[in-house]
Image (cartoon, rainbow, N blue to C red; front, side, top):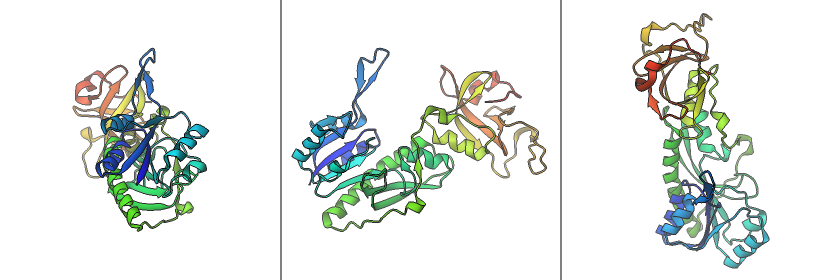
Length: 324
C-alpha cells in the first residue's frame, strides 16, 4: 500500500515512525515549510516531521506554502497513492486532493470526535475540565474534522494533568490507533460512523492572550487554565505592574486546612478578600483569592526569569497585593 503522509509537529512524528516501522510504503512526506529563527531570520528550523522523515531515510519531502496549487495536485496524481494519512498537518485539503487516493484520506485527531473539532483539542479538553480525552481516526471530507469516524481510544485526564502530559500520552496513542485502523482497512473490516453534528463542538487555535487569568472565575477554572496552557502559551497575570506567569497551582481539598485559618465565607456573602488578592504567603505557595474559593499558587515565572517554586521567591512578594 503506497501512502502519502502529511503532518507537521512532534505530535505527528510517532505515526510516521509507525508506518515505516510496520513496512508501509511511504511514497512522500508533506509538511509545513521550515520556520526561520533568530533576529535576522536567516536560519531555519526543520519541522519535527521533516526531522523524523530524514532520520527514517525518506527523501521525498514536500514543504508547501499552499496545497491548493495545480502543481501539487498534479504531482500527487502522478504518485498515485493508495492512501493519504494526515495528522496535525495544519491545512485543509481540497476535494480534488481527497479524491486522488483509491482508499481515501484518513486523519488522526487528538480528541473524541465529534467533540473538539479544530486546531487545539488537547488544550481545550483540559481547560474545560474534562475527565477523559482520546484519539479518533476518520475519513476526511472537506469540512474541519467532520468526516466519518473509524476508531476511537480513550485516556483519563487526572485533575492535575498538564497539556504537555496529555499531549505526550495522545502522541503515543495516536500511532497505535492508526496502526489498528490500517490493519482493519487492509482486512476490509473498517466501519464508518457518521458524526452527530448535534454533539459537535469546534475549538479555536490557542493565542497568547488566552492565557490571561480572570481571577473572578472559580478556583477550578483557573487551575484548569494553568495546566491547559503549560507549556504554551502559559497562564499569566500581573504583579505590581509586571507580567507574572503562573505555571503550577493546586486546589484546596474539601477538608484540607487552610494556613492561618483564612476565612472566605461565600455561603454568607461575606467575601473577605477580593479576587486575585494574595491572602497569605507560605513556604510552599501563595494563597490567592478567586471568584469562589482560595487557590494555592505553587510555581511562577517573572519576566526575563526562570520558573521558580514559591519557596524560592515568595519572600520577595507581599501579602495583600492584587494579582491582575
